[in-house]
Length: 363
Image (cartoon, rainbow, N blue to C red; front, side, top):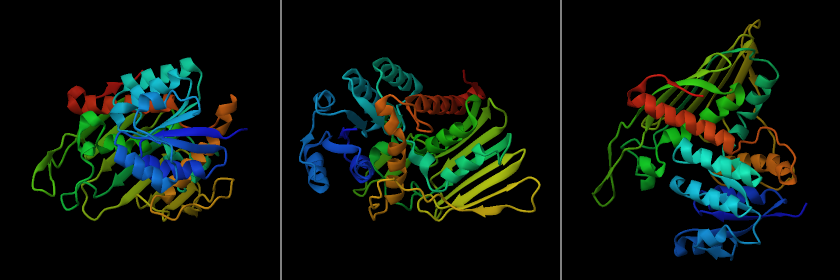
């Protein structure tokens, strides 16, 4: 199999995580990068050792020397760039969240399916060291029939004591907020374990409505910093996804799965590999600790030593499992544009519910 020639649009996360993840696997070759600002793409190209740079994404996606376009731009650009790429016959990898709404997410899916190209979405959280073992335990029947699941994330990213983030993160119309930015990972993961959703009820809110810039001016915030989303699962059971990033001195993720045959619990920091997994059958005396996953890409290439190493490893594993798709063979567990569309349906329903519609049915 010849190396898959990759072009990446977006040099933020695209440079920090995506390029190193692709480079963990010899089957991919990142040959070119593209970004809107000339100074940004030039700086990234120099840092990454990629001299082939561009600021024209419309021409970039049509290049004959690129097989795969990775869309790693602001969310509002995802639909246009993805559809243009697949219409040019390119395979596509799209950063999450997939789109601003489910309508655009569906357009992207329909375009990719119509073009017959391989497509995937960067829900690499499925491949985290503390989630791969949970997936295996659920598949092995440790949980049995789902009764209830709870995923909770608490951080301090938007607490007034922290410096502001990139301003687009505070704008709903640009895809900002943590229902899209963080809760979407949990929603995707739980749907991958337990199947589709029948109905959604939620409270999505902005606790801190203004952020001070260093120059004394203010950012008006309309994206969410806190959300609680309740899902009625078609397979039975209830799922609660709770996310808040206004908790001073908090950096915590918890996952609790309760079923007819057993319980699985994961507790640890938002970032890092220090999570503890415990599981046990209903007939046992207590939960027992389960080892986190040790899987690395089969290439054996060393993982970069940096803060984003965990995300790089998880994305590299996703990319490795995706490889059969480029030869027309099925893949297992790799999130694609259909998964991204289903997550976006839940997010849209959560916002409608929070705006006053109560329980919103999904079909």
